[in-house]
Length: 267
Image 1: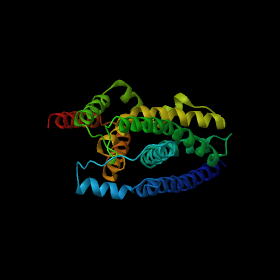
Image 2: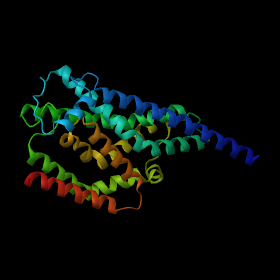
Image 3: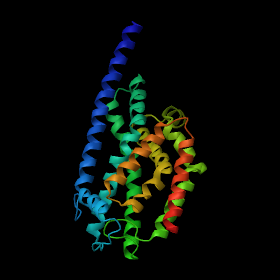
Image 4: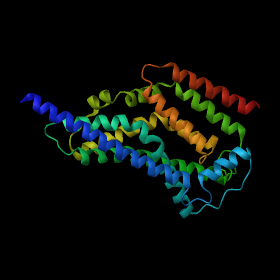
């Protein structure tokens, strides 16, 4: 009897994992398409990236900011964060789904997981709102071009150095450990029910934000809609979260960012 129950549970877990992976992939794909097409923007991300490659350092005037335009920029940031951050959060989401399925008192994995993910994405919505405000401010003081990148080398270099220093900070490392070890996170923060799922998703989102917000801020350096820069940051974030037991990765990235930032200021 026990074997039958275990086999049934194992089949359910495999089915849940497949369905959730397809669902998460669809979410990432839709967000990526939205980002690449630059919906609501004057140019697509493809065009912006090509211009950045063919005409590096090009100074293009930024468009006029209105409340409507600011809302489109906010959507661009938030949906771009979904495309960049959901892949690295997928192991935690799948782990949570397995915990829900194994809980004999809960059989609502397909309802609980979207709630958990919504809490996670809500935090990145807050970040996107802040990023929009910062971008508006930089444009208003003439420090950001129409290519959506910082125009002043000292400011860009300072941001790179700050990101390099943050890579080795205790806060960064503490948040990174929570992202790298889903079991530890859920053991310390488990809450039952729908509100519990939302709360845990939000809390995990804050840990993720604490780990990655400075790296995401580097989009201001390489170009907010530069697809090569977006892909590079997303890949590094995913690698950093999966690279458990490789502390040298943070040190190496810290050194590279600091050296790059200082070189940008000096040269």
